[in-house]
Length: 241
Image (cartoon, rainbow, N blue to C red; front, side, top):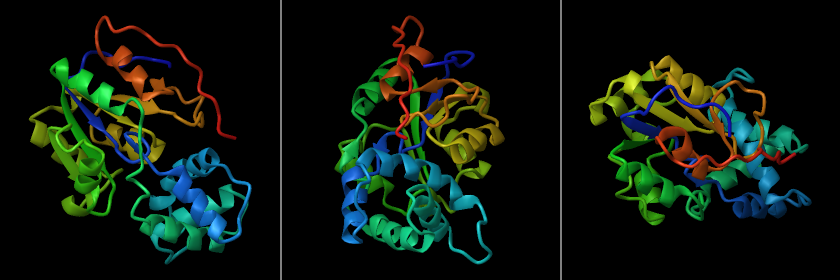
C-alpha cells in the first residue's frame, strides 16, 4: 500500500470488473484449454487480461473492433497468436459465468464499512448492460447508491461523461469524490479527466509498482487510506509474472 488521498471523500466511485468482481480465472483457463492452450495459470490469465483491457480504446489496427483489440492483446501477452487470442477471448466474454464466480474476498466488508462511515458509493463500469444482474447475482444489489453500466448510460470510461453522471446522481462535486479502480487509462486517467483528483489504484497483480499514485494490493487496504483512524495494513504487491 502506498500514498493516501488528500482528505476524507464524501463519495467513493468504484470500477467493478477487476476491482470488485474479478473475471473468473477458471473460466479463462477452461476456454484456453478448449483450444489446446495449456500451462497458463488462472492468475496469469487474469493479470494479462487486466493489461489487455486497456487496449479497448487503443487503435491497434484500423477497423479492428474493440473486443478484438482486447483479445489480440491478451493473446500476445500470453504468448499465443493474436488471432487465437481473439477467438478465445470472444468465447470467454460470452461465457455466462465470467463475472459471476469471483467476488473480491474483501468487497462485502469494505463496501459495508465505507457505507457505515457515511460515504456514498457508486458503481461505474464499462459493461454490456449486465452489470445490475451481475451485482445482484453476487449479493451486491443494494451495496451502491448509484449503478452506472456504460451500455445503459450510452457513454463509457475513460470519457468524462459517465463519471459526471455518477457524481450528479450522488449530488457530489468531483473534488469531494474518490475513484477506485484497476486500470491506468480507463480508471485513473479517466477519473482525473473528469475532475476527480483523489484516485486509488488497485494493483492486485503487482503490475504497476512504480506508478506514483495511491496504490493498494488488496481491496481490504482501502479503508486505511480513506477513513481517519483506520488501521494501516502494509503489504507488497506480488507480480503475477
